[in-house]
Length: 478
Image (spheres, rainbow, N blue to C red):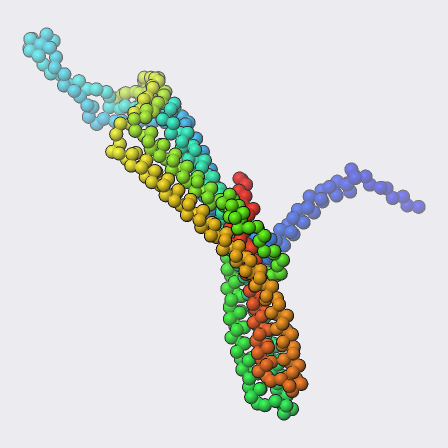
């Protein structure tokens, strides 16, 4: 009888398992990373639905990244404004060597003239030595700079708010552009499919007419018309292919994917969006409350107001600073620095600066700020009127596109029914070929119009939401 000993987890087997777990986890991480990298490298088509496209656009779009960079710069400007109230420390060191030591003539009284008593004489006194070494450390602390530090801090903070609002405005603009591009790509693919289906349908019909012609049922004229219909559809297919390729490249550019990277778009144009039920007055008021562009302009006006205050205080407003200075100097005729005798000094100072005249530069800059404030007031009025018009236009377009979609869906149903009737009549020898070709054309056109109507409604909804400022939120700070 054999006895098998159960190994505890603490034994060699347990230790081996514990040692293998990190290796297994690293292997899984490596494999998953390799899969993602392989997809990114282009070994597999990059599958893109709306959520993926929006995520990639927020991460990679250059315009949005530039707006974020501006917001990041503004945060450093706030820190820079704080630095105006901080002390500054400066250290200087100098070494001077005189090839000819400066001297100064001094007239001595005649009592000291031993060679010619009673006659004044002149003696040249040298000041300093050939080598002069000096060093100093200066600390200067602003105490009050006419209140301009606080104003500069307000300017920096408002500029940061403007930049952060700019990021959100850029994102909302990008959302509308991406929606147009993403669903525009889908509709371009649908157009291409519709064009190919129409061409295939025309070829099948031509084959049917050829068989009927071989049987002597139809004339050669019918056969020629069927062939012409096929030839007319081929350029439309080529044009649809070019439009599809262009739409794909435009989408890749927006989401930051290389133009030669193969992508696979997933999504459809099926929409169930109800037309806006909010009255125009309410929608317009909502837009005036939510649109961030108005907040940006108001903050811009604040900046010019602060600038006016700062420039006004650059004339006759005193600035107070305190300082502390330590310095040391030494002089010697030789270069033996180790034997230099340094003389040290430490002192404090109070500085009062009163700007009296700067050539009217501050006054003119203050007047420029006042003019800019007036310009912003006019821009605010213009922007508000523009937003009201935009809300009205987008609302009407949304309503129109909703009605257009209903009509387009009905047209497709009627066109399918008409084409089926025309085919039956022609096959039964009652109808004419012109009826069939006309019904086929109407069906293809109605399908195209349906696709366009779906796309128009999606875009109209996005533009309406953008106009009323729906779901506008600030981007969180990093």
